[in-house]
Image (cartoon, rainbow, N blue to C red):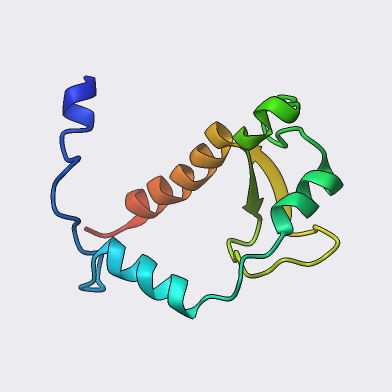
Length: 112
């Protein structure tokens, strides 16, 4: 797929989230208002699990540690046990792949 075809939707009005009737911007705004202050779980996870991607094994250093993200194994970003048992550090590429697999599976298993 060409770059222009893939990203041709940029700059358009946000579409409503599936089934909710609300735009993604409205949902994000509501979550920010209802949410608690951000947890320092990212730093905790990096200390516990190290600067390495749990999926591809790529090692990171201080200058590129921003490419490491914390993935919640159970999918609940509010479940942050202090022992880090619900976290795994994934590089941004593996994290995106992990979440796309779930979306693809949902799509393939849908009746529509």
